[in-house]
Length: 59
Image (cartoon, rainbow, N blue to C red; front, side, top):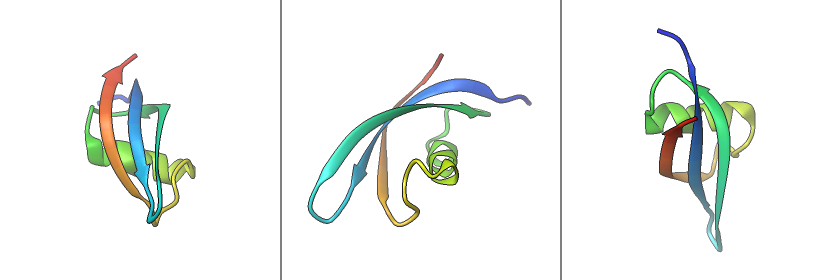
């Protein structure tokens, strides 16, 4: 199994605000949990933040 390029759109929720963002990441599949783990591993999202995946699309 090889990783493929995906565009992930997500929302970061904090106590007082929410922010929508997107990133292009290499994933094995269009899995929400894998996408969140990869974004947190890259440091794109703080480990203590709540993340909601809005969409995952293969590039």
